[in-house]
Amino acid sequence: MPPVLVNQHRQSFCGLRYAPHISQRVAFSQPLPADSGLASRSSIHMCAAVGTAAIVKGHAMGILRKAVNTLFGTFGMTALAAVGAIITAAVKFYGIGRPKIVKEAPPSPPSAETSFAQTRYEMGDREVAVNRTVVDEQLSAYLDTGVGQYAVVLGPRGTGKSFAVTNALDARQGVVQLTLGDTLSVGSLYSKVLQMAGLGQYSSTADLEEQLTPFMRTATRLYRAANPDEGDESTWLPTLVVDVADGTAPHVAASALKLVKMLAVDERVARAVVILCEPNSISAVTDDPDRQKLLWVGDLTDEEAHAFLDTRCCLLPSNVSAVAEENAALRQALIRQVGTRPSTLTRVCDLLLQPDANASTVVHSFVKARRRLATIAVGALIAVDDMEQPDSETKRGMRFRTLLKQMLDDPDAALRCEDAPYMAPAAAVMEVLSRREHDAIVYDSAARAYRFNTRAHVAAAKEALHAHAHDTNELSTNQLSTNQPSTN
Image (cartoon, rainbow, N blue to C red; front, side, top):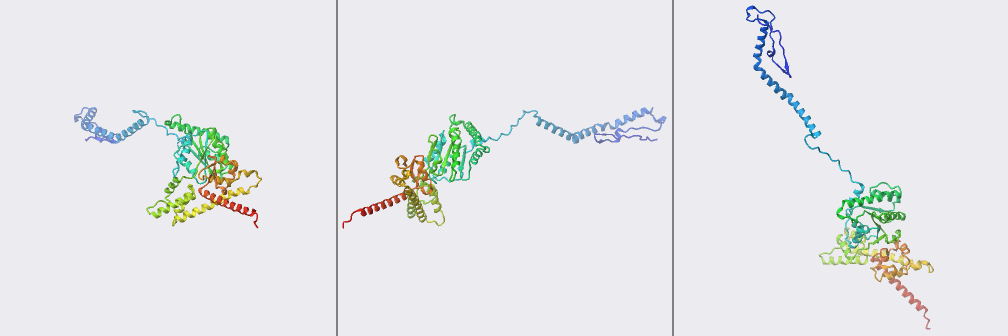
């Protein structure tokens, strides 16, 4: 009777399914016959096991090799990659096997004092009119070494005072510039100064001093620390520029000057420059020569005027002789009869650069118009003499006809006050000269002297006094002839 397969076991290892003959187990459900040649069931089982082992012995090693390859080729490699990634992350995170790198914190932003001390003043895109060596040297000397004083820049309208200061400040560090006007109050003035210095809003004068003075001191210390090449004797200080524009209320100007004095004189934490739009507005400034350095900015010299016209490409020399002669003559007429004021030359250049402009017509018309205005101004000053009453106490101080006559002895020079003792004190005279219609003469507070405003006013004064002398002579002759007795 053939053997009956009573049990087959299918076993797996790591997902590998093995063939049934490897683990099959053979059993017989019926007794064995006596002549089968087998002694007992146990012998049969033993023989079956030995036979099975013999059958699968050759396959065992191959199957094992397949199992190992599968383990490390499929699942194993994935597992090993995961383990490797974990180890790598741990090495990076904990810095295993290499020095620990400490990341530096990002640098903190500079303080307001540092930014202020390091910021350079820039002129911007303004055109440089002409190099005024004398003015630049005076301003630079104060800005570099001036201590215990503040500078007051004076001069007639249009002479380039603001431009001269701006040019001297170019590339200088730590500059606060403030322009006063007709809409600025005292509170807004102080707030603007604090804001430009990077501080808060103004609340009181005491608060202003408590904030601004330490700010300037700290900025000075930081600048000197950042520039050790200048040595311990560095004279650098922050600079405050106050431009008193036309229309500024007197009390606002006075408050600004009080601030300037506090910083430049009392605390000595800054240098200060005050620009006055009008030469005769010096009355708003206390006459204090020990604490003020007065700088006068007048008209250009003739050489500077020619250089100015060259830079503006106006009335240039030409290869054509006729044109060259005409341009030279027009330049001379403009400079000699009107003057060398930068604002005047700029206006003429603007007119000449207009389309279809005729140079001769433009210049002669301009000269005629300015001479007319100068004549009116000279007449207005002379009229002040005639307006005084004979018994008036102010009669001594309003002899402008005499003053004009004496100034004509050297019209390009300044006439000192002590050389005109018949005039009133400067404060009283400036009160009259501060009116626009009386601008034929300006008072030079730096030299304490009187000057003609422009060369047009010089020519107008000559004409007016000559006409007055002629009229006086005629009047004297008529009176003399009238008083002579008749021969009949």
